Image (cartoon, rainbow, N blue to C red; front, side, top):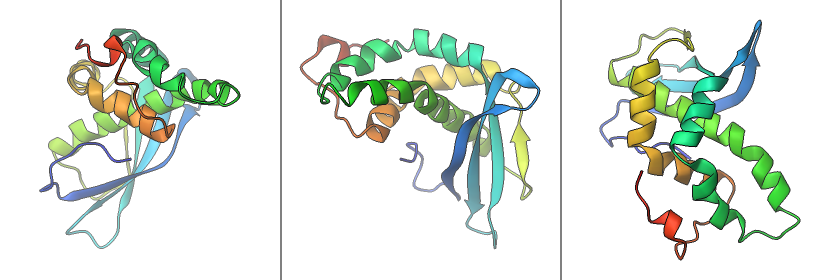
Length: 158
């Protein structure tokens, strides 16, 4: 799934892999994205780092568990544990994608690069909060479950 972005965006972005722990930083995970600008002959890789603390804080603030639980209940009971175990990784991917979008908004050089965990922290909190529906939709889409629209929690705003 790709994030909601402008059709005029000059970039095509795909998740390459992640999240993976960052070497010598047990409190940081990274997702790597392939980014290609229309005018470039080839794409680049961008490593986007996020602290586990920031992910945990966003998970609580966005009420991720409360928001996805009704949809997970629609899965076969045997499939739920596997889906639940994937949620933290999918949250990290969605949040990393939000952080990458922040960098893309200001432009990106045609070099493989890294967005460090301590960069854009307040901006990421704001962006992920503003895009909370995207974050939830990303997780549910990757789990191949539809939201349970009959649940009051699926209709609430943060």
